[in-house]
Length: 140
Length: 140
DNA sequence: AAGAAGATTAGAATGGCTCTAATATACCGT
DNA sequence: ACGGTATATTAGAGCCATTCTAATCTTCTT
Ligand SMILES: [Mn+2]
Ligand SMILES: [Mn+2]
Ligand SMILES: [Zn+2]
Ligand SMILES: [Zn+2]
Image 1 (cartoon, protein in one colour):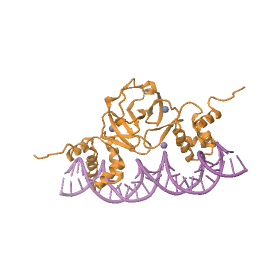
Image 2: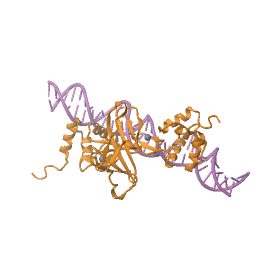
Image 3: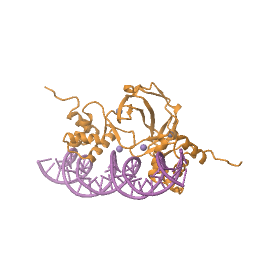
Image 4: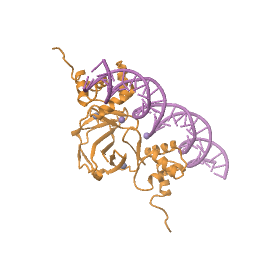
């Protein structure tokens, strides 16, 4: 049994989509593969669209946005907004924070346990906290 | 000497602009007054533009953006981006954080000393930290 | 008052993203 | 496999916050 499957291949991606209740279409499979094939990444819609084009994967920009939002809704991605002109989609959905390199626009993960927040304040009016984002901007 | 000047009047605003090296034009004075007249606020460009219109202050949208960015560059405002469709300009430039009410889109200040961060990680590659933003999203 | 630097403006342009509504595909039951 | 229904994809138009352009106007300095 030579190389039955790489660390994250078609099969795994297919299972992940099915497990999320997302139909494993050709486009979603291809995009999911681009996103999840190697380590974690912070991708923009435009980036992903261009990667798809480069690999001759025929997919429309609308579908890229649809897929990214669908994946996000199912918890496969986390959407991150840094500035008012575009967002990133993070394949790391565990609790963690980010360095943001202002020069290059790159994001880098900070493991969740490397920043401890003491005394997180109560949300006013009994509102429920849905997410805590910490972004450390650096001149890099 | 009855009511020589309110807590933040024309005079104060004029001095603030001059102190920043910004020419105190009619438009900047009017916008600065709207922004700084009462307590702290988190205003969008569109909001400010509409307030100006309501008060019959003749100013173009381009000038509103110019003024907001000029004020920000001089440290009179701090720009905050929550999602990829618009930013807020915060008249509170001291160190503090924010609750973000996802339903209404409103921001509320959290005093800087109400959240303590332990062990802030070093910026990679000797980069310098320019800002730390903490946004707590709540379902309000 | 005059020149130079800086600011304002209308309107066009940009760019990320969303919408529309027509077509195509995946899925389920038979 | 077939047919029917739900779901997904798509091109292109549209949207909206923001920025740009380049002409005009204002402020500042001398
Ligand atoms: Mn989105
Ligand atoms: Mn800006
Ligand atoms: Zn991340
Ligand atoms: Zn604030």
